[in-house]
Image (cartoon, rainbow, N blue to C red; front, side):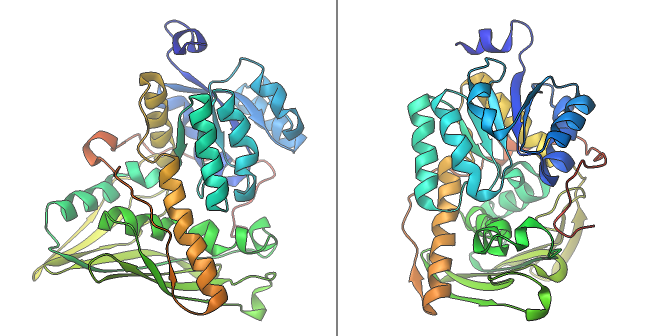
Length: 377
């Protein structure tokens, strides 16, 4: 089916199924679809009939499917793409058959929970001739792109070091606290600093120098490390460190330092507010808070543009694979207690700040339907 016939003459909107109706889909993605101008929701997929009914009524979506009915959805000719927001370990389950059927997929990060599954998803996209994008919303966010521009312009000199702290106090009743390491802070939150390391340095980490995890008995979590600290080796004797945690008060910051200057971002990874810079170039300091944008609507609009134009998106499946190779090496280092080399991946594609920046206005989140934020708030 051609794009023109699939989307309808004159409509030029990509028809999406939202697969997985948890807090991130309800709070962040669905409220902003209408103002993208090139996207619409035509189907919902969930294992929860209450969500299907209430959200279908809220957004006037007739197509409502259980997970077991997913093959029926793929045959329905009512969608062109998926936004996939199931738990991490269920991404391949839905992405692979959709991509093989020629349905485009915008998949939340991490792409799955292993490099093997990520490669299987990428291969499915190639077989089906469909577009695949890993949902790295910060690849379109103004403060992030401004930092990349400054680094590439040489304002910080030669990059030397990176450090980040990204933490939240997760409710022990949340599913993230009850499904082991694959739902823990490394897989759930670690992709943010890992991806930032890669796009700020413009290079791939070569080794996990050290990885340490701790388990606080009083946290109420299951059998996984609730706090993890990692040191990575970058090419050219550069170092990158980060800490992620489910058992610390909210922290959301990074520092990238070079021979001429540094940028501190705080907040650095979140949404719903403007991200901020504290820059020091030589002895001169400046601060800037960027206007809040709809990060999820922006990435959706970009992906739909790519679908309509037949253009491969920048944060593609290989971008998701690159972060999973780092995560897998960290898991191995946690187990061994020693350094672990990271499987090499030549990544020639990088962010194009001028082509990718999105500035859709921020949107308000409606009350969720049977979905709670990780903190339980």
